[in-house]
Image 1 (cartoon, rainbow, N blue to C red):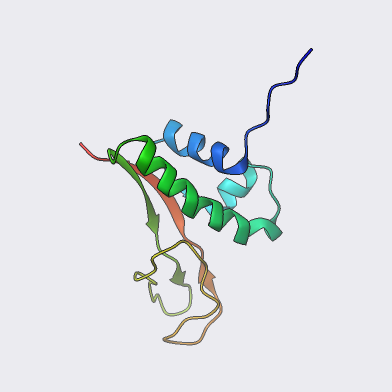
Image 2: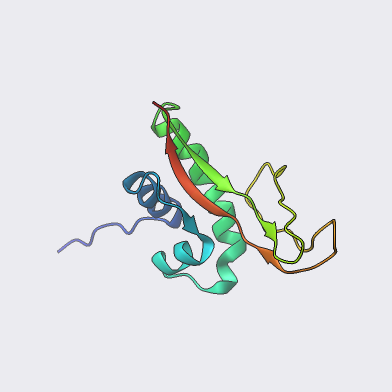
Amino acid sequence: MSQGVEKTTRERLVEIFLRNPGVEFTLRDLLSMLSLGERDVERLLSDINHAAKTIRRATRNSAHLAMRPPMCRSCGYVFKDLETARIPSKCPKCKSERIAPPAFVLVRRD
């Protein structure tokens, strides 16, 4: 018997977002759903950036992946000018390293 080809992490990410429009996923949620460890956060962020492009192309710009930006847990500073998904190492305002990671949601255009 032939085995089905297992999907890549990026393919599984795209599938998760397309099946759950409007649902916000934290990095912790996605790590759990994809059976990845905490050490895989950087790779997951890279995969999310690529999945966002795939989603935009696959839906012919009728949907896009939106990011709730990282936020400093100490002073409330929001890292709103990020072009790609990442977790900053420290806050430029108060220098705290207590940074809440970004969250992601698929938004459909009407």
